[in-house]
Amino acid sequence: MRIVVSGAAGFIGSHLCDRLLADGHTVVALDNYLTGSLRNLAHLAGEPRFSSMEQDITRPVAIPGPLDSVVNLASPASPKDYLEHPIETLDVGSNGTRHMLELALEKGARFLLTSTSECYGDPAVHPQVETYWGNVNPVGPRSCYDESKRFAEALTMAYHRKHGLRTNIARIFNTYGPRMKLDDGRVVPAFLGSALRGEPITVFGDGSQTRSFCYVSDLVEGLCRLMLAEERYPVNLGNPCEMTILQFAEYIRRLTGSQSPIVFEPLPEDDPRQRRPDIAKAREVLGWEPRVSLEVGLSETVKYFRMKELPCPK
Ligand code: NAD
Ligand code: UDP
Image: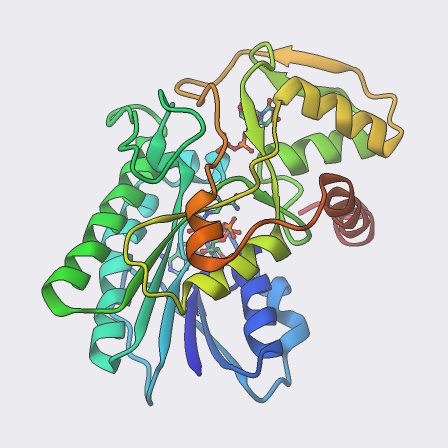
């Protein structure tokens, strides 16, 4: 297949490109490098089935030649990034998604949206099932991301209903791995960076809020299965192994053998109190579930940070 990947120079996008190329596909990568980096794609230079274009997808997108699939990952994704770029985040979820949907329509291609567990907001239903409509503050600081993704989901369903476009929606839960930016503020790089440097590990709130962490290769496997599926409604992709953020901080300290103290800072506004995906639908529709343990995934991530990021943080 010939596949367009938007947001290809980001963390997940670059791993997806690697996997699609390894599976024999041809990849056209689009990115405006707002939060991603060409460094994540540098190893693909010279690969004949790979090409990369600087493209802001909030601008009209023209790709010559046939296309079989469009995968839309373009969006700031870490709270630090979307709080710094709230308007760009709303723009890419709305206008950007529209341009990618139009591209898929023009080419008769399939379309996969990478949405998020943030659609559930601070969830009152636990674990989160796809049929839960969520508890989102529409005017809070996180609303630029949450509502952008909720709009993108609605737009994707509208293109399916109106035009019969073959669409899929992945609701991705916290995912981690190599090529995350050490300074992007998300909890995995934040805790690992502090632990490896021997600096205090900063837990927000009392650390009783929960998350679960999916290794990037597991997530990419789920995306590859979903992009071929006939399921039009959202499918959760994430790891259901839930822990509190304080437990996670203690786990990171043990894993890295760090002496870093754990310190506490105020909880950011609207920080979800609990989060865990119900992945029964992904198991049933895709035959998918995560395989990589937290220990193995974090060890791979530590190796990457030690090799690439720690000597010269961006
Ligand atoms: P990332 O920031 O590393 O990657 C996003 C990429 O999109 C970056 O390379 C960025 O430059 C690009 N981009 C942003 N605006 C753009 C625009 N207007 N035009 C073209 N490119 C643009 O983030 P990530 O973690 O790789 O996330 C990828 C996708 O997965 C995002 O859509 C995110 O919402 C979704 N997601 C990620 C997670 C996670 O835990 N990593 C969880 C839920 C959802
Ligand atoms: N968090 C933390 N310290 C940090 C970064 C994050 O305690 O340095 C917490 C944050 O408040 C949240 C959880 O870790 O409860 C996950 O945060 P992240 O930014 O990775 O993603 P989120 O799931 O909130 O989108």
